[in-house]
Length: 232
Image 1 (spheres, rainbow, N blue to C red):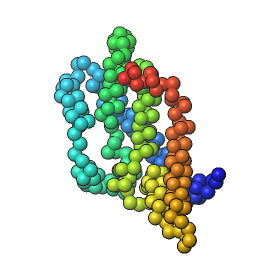
Image 2 (image 1 turned 180 degrees about the horizontal axis):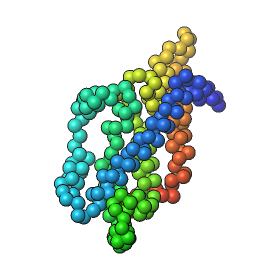
Image 3 (image 1 turned 90 degrees about the horizontal axis):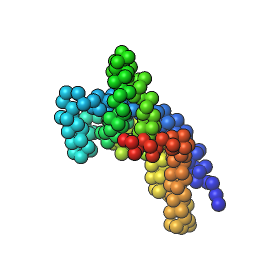
Image 4 (image 1 turned 90 degrees about the vertical axis):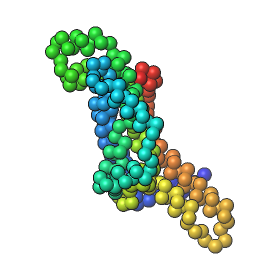
């Protein structure tokens, strides 16, 4: 047994910075995406919204048809988002799939509760803030986990949009460490098998360290997970 692989990862000069940066980025991303999801799902849960069917058709359409990597890259570039944290936040600020889950949850809320609030003088914003959201803790917690895990594990957008080391997420830094470990030359006389062993050890240590933060979060929202998915 040896902990040298963990030592290699933890003593990397960029590891701690990327860890703190990724935690902050993920928190901002989760808050923004939840706000966007709620503001999109709540109006679409209302039967009296004009153009509701057309909007839903458009949203479902973009779930199945994507412009592709190059058009997405050009959009991010033309908005001046390359090499900035916003390139990792704004393009994925709303998930159509998650929005539909939340919309269906809002539609399952008893209308009599909402009608009573209307009679008491609630407007739509107050109704959303004081009635609907407190009743939606389960689905909000579930979607927060979805968004957090997707942002934490994402590597594609980091590879495409980020070249500055200070904006690399933890996954980007770990990817570089794995690539460097794979390409590092060993002293003459060391076997090729040893080279593979070192590479695999660093890769495994990187994976373990990258999942620890998510493992620490999951127990706090586990009780909402099944309920949120089934009701949505």
